[in-house]
Image: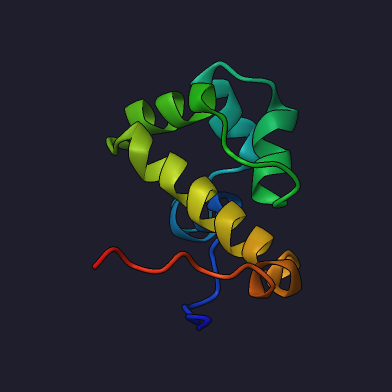
Length: 100
């Protein structure tokens, strides 16, 4: 049985759409405030790379969220993406019978 959920959201999409655009902030400006290389934030908002624990901690501090908030995006996105990629292989696995 395959469960379908809403499309997974990449942390970069969320960062871009919910923080950078509404606040009129560039990736470079955010990177400067986080004391990070500009390219790290640019690559995240372009959805080329995921959030690292280091970046999650910095984003959480700056935006007054939690590091888990940012890491959950990565986990959910990667699990859903990988599940789609492995769907045919996963379908071949027989689930273990429940204990009686």
